[in-house]
Image (cartoon, rainbow, N blue to C red):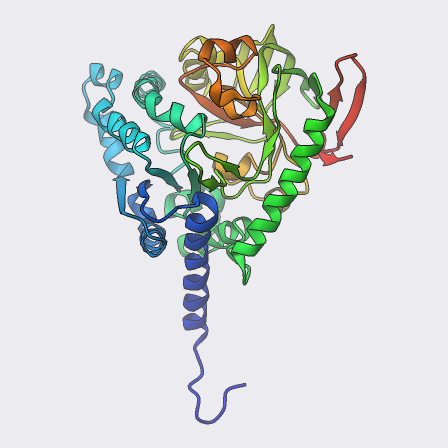
Length: 424
């Protein structure tokens, strides 16, 4: 209760103060826990213009942590649309290789990588699927030198999210714009543990729990996983010498980072040639500005041989035709249905969040860190163990409260891992 000498704080002012506190906590955990930035290290950050409030807070915390230099590459989604309206047809096979080469050089020199997610999930949904596919392929090729450093975890990197009006409108389409934006921010804060008084301590406890789950699965040494549920009967063979990971990891440069914030998954490397059966997506996939819904895929000998989507069929087809490895799996992840993101009941239309609400698989590039001594193996040696290679790495969700998962031992015995989406 306010005393006679105190000036009561208006509710709107209180809300603003609470928002600022949570935004600051999110920036703090992004730098201290997610990125693990060390004094004297450079930071390369990518973001869209609408995410500037968080970008500036992150920049502040980076310099407080001793960053040598923070370089932020901002993109404008409206300008991206102008390319599809007025750009020459042959320009969609081109990407700014000089830019991605520069990022790769920065990472080789020891820079950390931070991406702020928050773009419009359906930005390119109304554009020519052929142009979208060609542009995505060009970027994937140009980005490959930098992506390899990330997938090998040579550097410390992380992804965090910022609410934007366009994104909020897709999550809460029936709410006024201001209310939708506020609700999305609150959902991000909750999922990222920025709504807790000591967010850093909460993240460290959560990280330890994910490591315990990974250790249990590594003890089991399953040869394969079997997913069974509505529209899904899928056997995913696991790579030789595969390792389960979850939470944070020590990068090749010695920095400990948690690559995705939020994260609820434990994941490993499938064998690229040993996936069989059918699988149906349980959530929509937002892929580089296009929504792909109702994905249904059939695998034979590790490769996608049939692929259908209720929406975004053309983009799906072009994605899996990116290169030879785009039709094979590079990741399989287990996420309980009772994860905070799943229990929010929200479809975020953003892979960073939706993949942490459900078990998922990823087409494309495998993480070499999910193979024993993978960082010391050549591409040929990784492939011999079953690790996939591709220009893409696209996660999509296959888990729900109706999915059962068994671990299959080397002798062929089935052991229950999940029932109705929950750990047994």
